[in-house]
Image (tube, rainbow, N blue to C red; front, side):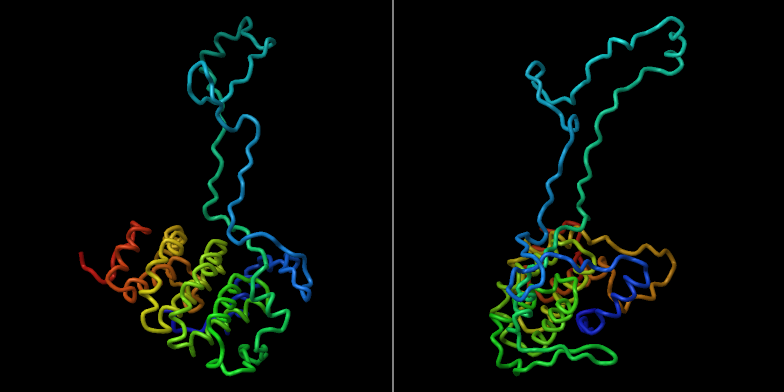
Length: 308
C-alpha cells in the first residue's frame, strides 16, 4: 500500500528517471501564472481540466434534410466531365461499385491530457512569502522547514492551499505542495475531518487534468488523507460523484508485462494499481454505504470485503 510511503521526498528522483532517462520533454517553464505582483509569468484565467471544443470542418457533420426528415452526410454534386466512356464497362465489372467515402467520426480524446494552468493558490501564496516554510536542500532528499509549529496552523486556511498545488508540474511549487500536504496530514489529527469539504475541488481539479504523473501523486495523497484520521473515509462518501469518474476511466490502465517483473513498483507510477489500492481503502474505511456508492460510479468494481 503506497499510502504509508513518502511521496514528496522522491519527486526529483522519479522525475529524473521518468523524464530525463526516458528521453522525454521536461515540463514547460513558460506557463501562464497567477497574476500575482510577485509572479514572473502572465495571468492565466483558464481552469484546470476544462473540455476542449472539438472543431469540425465542412462536410464532417451530418445535415438535416427537410425532404427526408433525417440527418444525412452531404453528397457532392456529380461532375459533368466524369461519365462512362466506351471500353470502361469491363473495368467497372472487375472493380465493382465505388462506395462513397463518408467522414470518420472524431476521436473522443478521453485519455488526452487537459489544460492545467499554473494559477494555483499555492503558487500565489508561495511567491508572496505568505507560507511559513522554506525548502531545506539536503543530500539525499529535500525537506520542508516550518517556521511555525504545525500544531498552531489553521487547517481550514492552509490545507486547501497545499492541496490546490498538487497539480503543479514545476519546481519548487510541486515539491512544496506535496511535502506540505504530507506534513500537515501527519500532524493534523482531529483537525483534518472538518476540512474535507474544502479539499474536494482541488482533488477534482488535479484528477481532471488527466496527466498521469499528477494522477499518481493525487491518488497517493488521497490514500494518506484516508489514513490520516478517523472517519475521514466516511466523510468522503458523499463526494464520490466528484472523484470517482476519473477512477472509472483509468481503472484498467495497467502494465501488461506478461510473465515479466516490474522492478519499478516502489515508484508507484502505475495508475491502475493505485486506483485499485485507493478503491480498496475507500471501501474499507468508508463504512457500510461505501460499496454501493462505489459500485454506482464504477460498475465493474468488485468488493474486497463482501464475498458475494
